[in-house]
Length: 391
Ligand code: FEO
Image (cartoon, rainbow, N blue to C red; front, side, top):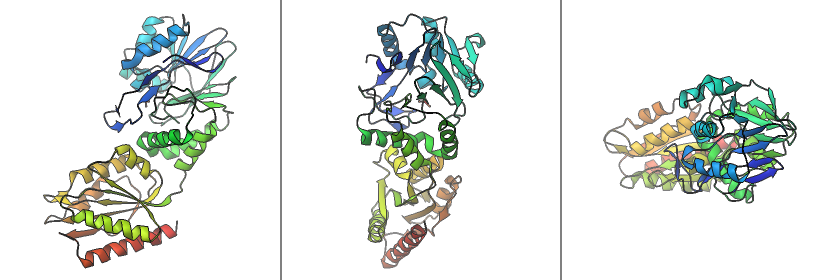
């Protein structure tokens, strides 16, 4: 992939990872990803903002060569995670005159992860600047998107924000700028759900801070560049708001069909009451799809049978995931069928310790559902409808 230009002397020289299908050995990447490294050529100095995943570093070096770069003065490190920092040692090897510019916390983390000596660093604190001659970089600490050391770099003269992971999306695309807004918003929502959602409050604070700066372009370090920044800005405003939707996310697993009958019945009962339902069979669902559904829903009902005397392990995994992602869900409940053991509610509850939610009474039944069990599901649907009507 050749380098591409955002504005004169501001180039994207990063790498595409078209066929990567998993991130952190956890997060599915249906559209691959990119690691966007940006080159800024000032009248006096040249800066490279973030590097790339070491596995695809050759693309970065090829793009730098094609762009005719013979000297890099500064490598700006917005975030210490290795998909952006991992190639810094190789860039320094090729451009030994370069200094790594970052904030104090990021320096510590970079040195924990990479063989970088103190002498290669220039440390910048919040809102400090770095002149490249006719272009000026301003460093804005934007912590917890999604690590504690994360910062954004703002190119003052061109009004370009380089926020690294913040506002990013896992897409490998040959076009630099967003073309298909629906596709990008879906990918960005998936990305937000998977790694940003637990930090909603911090994101709100960061957005308030960034709103003081005029921004013509948002150039994240994954996915395409936003030349209409309000697209992603407004989406984030919605995702981090307190508002929830009249929706129920229903992750489920069923072994012999009893829990499945309960799930099917509850889907109909909720739908009849005008409530949107997003069911996910945990044995075949993409984790990212579940995470995305959790962004807006008012309620999560987890449905599972018991295995031996505890909850099905898929349900435990799902509870642990929900607890880690900390969506803005307001209500939760558990339904399911058991044979002889009844530890499911306690087990699942213990995994949801970070969720500040109100619980509906569980509907846990023995064996195949009977008339009285369906009646209990009707009562659950009524209770959900009532709570949602108060939103
Ligand atoms: Fe794209 Fe947190 O690294």
